[in-house]
Length: 394
Image (cartoon, rainbow, N blue to C red; front, side, top):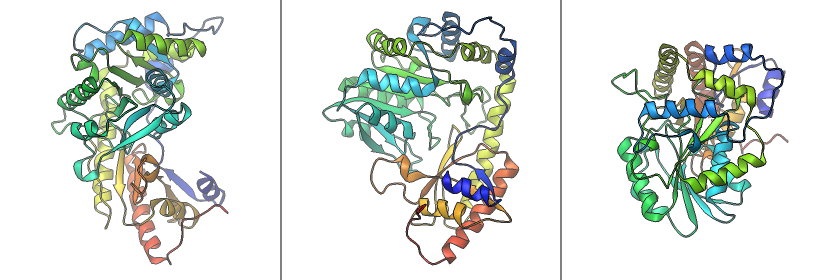
């Protein structure tokens, strides 16, 4: 960010593909709920969240299809964004010096929250050549003493990987066999792009897998689904009563999830299907443009993500962080440049991801096309300059 701010101070326009902040409008029912809120006092909400909102969420999950008994409101804990749900889940399943398995490249807060709690991250590496898929046996081989949970995003940030029902079931069985929890981050559930163009498709949920009642924990959020990142409403879903009770104690310690935002989040559940479809179609079109454009640049490659709105791309550079800083500090194309996220920070294994970047396709297609022009020109300029060590703000 300091390099981006310095570029803007020089009058350079910076295109941000480094962060997953959607540019699509927040869904209309959510905005209307904010405008209509007329309570005389913005009071505390119950620590577990408003009952009517949790009941509405239970209806949402049950319509997706769940294995066994329907999900109930008392199995849903409303949280301050999906991040708090993740923090609670790790804190409830682990003691300090315990371990969690994470799939790398991974959402960086998995490691951040684990570090906050004194929990060690054990990476299970996936590769672009495999479409970032996660073989169950690779997970099984990584489980050792002190491992308490497996944390998996599907659809995945930062790779866009989507696990099938069969793959979720295989991973769930590994967790059952080893007596560990299965924490599944399903924040991007609706953002899937099947080859057949099925307009009703959503990513399979761990809630659909039978016999995981004691092990499965779902992390969810309204941030991306309804383009409401600032609303800060998420939830944790589990049928494990003891785990739920532990998470509720954390929730009671922080008192209350946001009151007005829960009202807005409940309204968001009423978003018409055609509006959600339009959002998903927009992301699919952006993905297709970006993937094709990246793979057309000499030396650049990336697999086609199946979901979410992120991808990992390999660049023809030895140090992607140095290249990203170069774009901001030394390069512009007719007054424009590009900000990307170096992918090395999405890995725990030293040296992994050093030539990769993560891109979020959260800009419209004309802007993405311009970003591809900037990247192509930037790579050529970077290759032509004298080799330099990794840049420093000093």
